[in-house]
Amino acid sequence: MSELPSTMHAVLMTGHGGFDKLSYQQNVPVPQPEAGEVLIWVGAAGVNNTDINTRIGWYSKTVTDGTTSEGSEQGIADAEVEEDGGWSGALQFPRIQGADICGQIVAVGAGVSDSRIGERVIVEPCIREGATDFTYMGSEHDGGFAQYAKAPADYCHSVSCDWSDAELASIPCSYSTAENMLTRATLTAGETVLITGASGGVGSAAVQLAKRRGATVIALAGAAKADEVLALGADRVIPRGSDLAEALGEESIDLVVDLVAGEQFSALLQLLRPGGRYAVSGAIGGPLVELDVRTLYLKDLSFFGCTRLAPEVFSNLVGYIERGEIRPAVAKTYPLKEIVTAQQDFLAKKHTGKLVLIPE
Image (cartoon, rainbow, N blue to C red):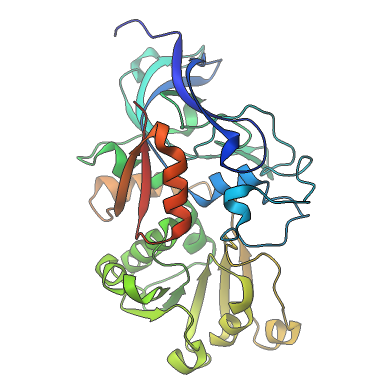
């Protein structure tokens, strides 16, 4: 193995706000793996909603808008986000974002076997801290928007497949989020699931993973993307903005996998059968919703808020990859220095699948 460089190209997030808070730099120190960690040469890193949410401080309770608002580009005006703008509270700046990391281990810290050098890995982004707490790559830890990243060795999963780096970089955040929702809500063969935001990274992953489980998959997506979502495995695509009760009938769905929330929330609950389940891991349509509690208890519904990954989720995903049971849709790749363009395209929502950055 050749000697590692001392500096690297990386995108530094210098604070909460607009695109001006993303600074592409070419002389950032290469991180040094500490005990229990490895250093990864980053082959690719996917773009996710959480990158934008974290940049603008959307996780702060002072923010009530969805992530498709103008604030996603310019920052959120008049919101006090400094104290709770990250996944677990205040962030330290500068921060290297990027929850999706695919690459090769090139160095190890104390306590990690040298035999791991050379492994091709993807990084499980949700780092468990004790029984209930967690931190996240690209939020509390520097992530993959750089040529090199370090991560806990136990969260770096070796993968053997013929996929490109861009394809593998589509997995960590989106597919683990989707698989976690299906795992927590116990989707089984023969059930019917409705997936909102089905053309996005998590939504398209959920379509494939739900179909893999033998469910009937109904996807909610823009009409122009229907053929692409059907190709991912959906049995039916309902155009976004449709009257859902009219299109599907009330009490016709076993599980709703929701990534949008916002104004459609109440309509989604009307679709659920008695004893149905609602799993949520996103709110791009707006985090504040109206709930008639009678619907919740009279229909015996179960709600699942899904963020901290169940322990088996990531290893299961690796198995699906290596057995050829899933394959992500990569819409487009960009050089790392074009991160603003990638995020602008992400916010435009004209793609199906994942947008991926390639460090130079």
